[in-house]
Amino acid sequence: YIRKIHKVLQRLRDVGLNLDLKKYIFVVKEVKYLSYIVEAGVYVRPNPKKIRAIYK
Image 1 (cartoon, rainbow, N blue to C red):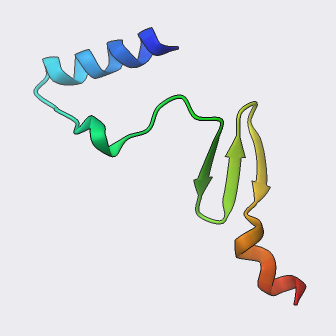
Image 2: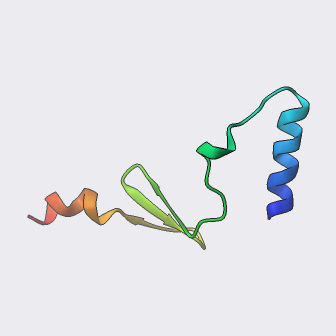
């Protein structure tokens, strides 16, 4: 997995695109995206903070 990321980053550099790696986080177990939480294993669930108003 890490090697694939390295290859992608190298190809981007080869064509003149540079990323500021301080802005990115790699190898995490979950990602918050819009109103959802995407967990490792492609499990998607609503973000409890975003749906709290529905329960009230």
